[in-house]
Amino acid sequence: MTTVLRTLLDTFFVEYMNVRSLKGSCLTHNKASKRVLEKCGFVFENEESDVFEVAESKTGIKESIGQGRSHEVNRDTEMRGVT
Image 1 (tube, rainbow, N blue to C red):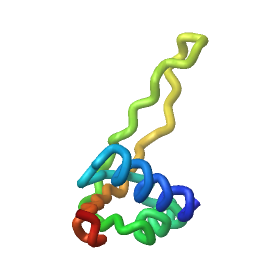
Image 2 (cartoon, rainbow, N blue to C red):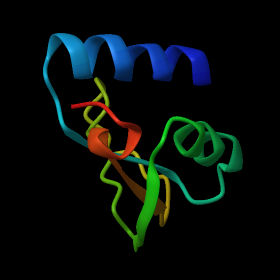
Image 3 (tube, rainbow, N blue to C red):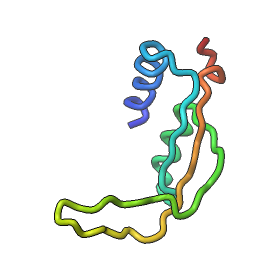
């Protein structure tokens, strides 16, 4: 997954879309996702609570996943030497 994200960041977002700053997030308990983001140059910014809202399903029933915690990260392309 790291290779896929790194390829998207470097070839699509930076070169093709000319993006200079990106934000991402993952569930706080998901250590693998945190590690992928870190390997791709994202830096921890903050942690937020209760940030998830689940849309109604096709049956019209609102699903609940309980309280969620989000691990917010930021990636500045300038930090990786991309200009």
